[in-house]
Length: 476
Image (tube, rainbow, N blue to C red):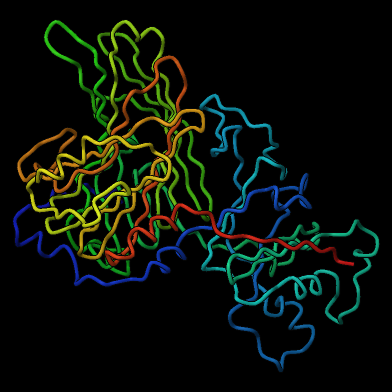
């Protein structure tokens, strides 16, 4: 069934039904909902191993009965379980590889090497180390006798990964072991992108996009806000639209040319699915007066509690004659949810109130330019949903950025479904370089309410990689 994009009544009575009473979830809960990303250089024992031969195993939370026979214990992995995981091939720029955007990889798509990354969920890990038990299981039969195959094949590796206070084990299996049901891949799928519906769904959220143009975002629903535990919608969309507005600086005899994502011509090139992340790769063209002024390769990665948008583009040399000081604004416009709060990493210390009025100090903040590295924006509806926004650039070029912030009950900024900017918030990229490829990553993290005094520390933790240590051992 194709879900429609509902146009909700925008009166106060309906809007008041949007959210339940806010909850004050801890910043630690927000962090634990993020995936763990393990760089391949920590897994060198598995270089050249087939991706399909790998498993990630943890101690099960509920061990089997102590009265089970040795054979039963062994055949049930005896307290061990295979968890969902995903290998990701990276390109030479360190982004998710796809063969459509012109950025190559030096890695092998079927084997593990330095251009791979392993991802799994922190919440699937166990508080118990697993290396010793997994080694015992892999090298012995149901009578705890060493398997002949272990004595005649190269020594296999078991790498234990410790993430803070939790553990998982990575190992390569033989073909015989791969055929054992208890070592089958987990069937858990944390997120699903459906191209024919233009829909990304996870346990905590549902995002509706245009089926033809993934840069057109329509509705967003979040658990305990406007979506119940069964995934049913219970209120109006939190989102009005994703807005990409480009002031090309093009001067015609009449006016400067301004474009938005509704003017972009996009084509989906590929969709990749996995248990931890689904991705959609698209190519977008922008033309002005018949001249191609912009070509963008856009990859959107949907995770269980966040979305990443990787944009690689170049303003061609041919555009120099008509383009002047281009500015690109990337923002999200909420569906007129008044009473929320906004803070940024560069000020203020006290959050702005979303009330339909752009105060002088709010307007002044939008004029300030900061460097992008480490910057963040926090928006809270104060009704059960928070959004943390981060932006990253190429190491070789860190463009000046500024805040996009509009708080107005009447103002219309295209693309627009519901009049009013309540609020429209994001980043403004200034002084975009002409003639060079440029990549930036926008990361949107969804959480429940964050206490105001925890916002800065939570934002900083969300940008830091998980602390990871590894220990490798053979089956000898």
